Image (tube, rainbow, N blue to C red; front, side):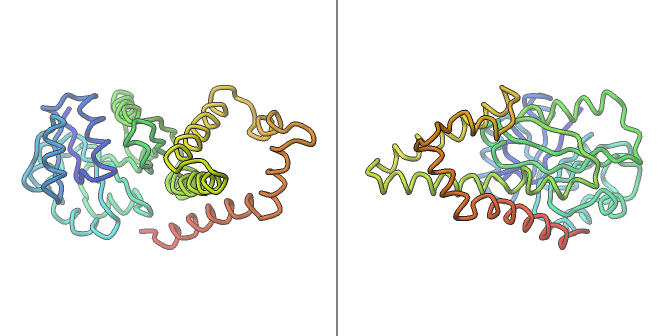
Length: 265
């Protein structure tokens, strides 16, 4: 099976590398806008195509890793070129399965996905929706799963929950970066050198996340385990609550959800 990646930037490049792992470089095609992305993709072993149409006629799975505002242009370029029975993967906020099917026509099978940028280090989280109106074979579902496993983890969700995946994983890595930066700033205020502060806080966030995933304990229970009665940690938790930390995080997530709803196509 040939996998075609349209867009090989910050999100597309880790997908391209994952596709090379799954299918082999000779079976991975890609297009991109910049010369640097072109050279990087070729260095990863993939085959560069001069046009999106050239890619579409060859690929058994076409992955659209492009910004929402260029979808109309790209879809017009590949309409009538995508093979009947090909899988088309859409990777953009607010772009629905029905929009892709209407725009491209033909007998295509659509997968809607919301990944996130930690895919760049092999730790992405992708929310995957298979079009209920398409008869995906088990082999095709397995291939799609292996593709997303190649740069992180994935969950399968109904399309009705795709917008909720934005705050859960799509945008939330940025919120975590702000949290890391704030903790590092505090550490610097307390005298720790900047580089050391980033290393300490980032590793702490990584370790805390692994604790949640690997122990199966509720995050609240893990928090309680750190809080000695009358100790330093519970004093910090109190300050977080007094300053609206929990509410601020929830409001940020809901704001992303509301925004993606307004972008729906």
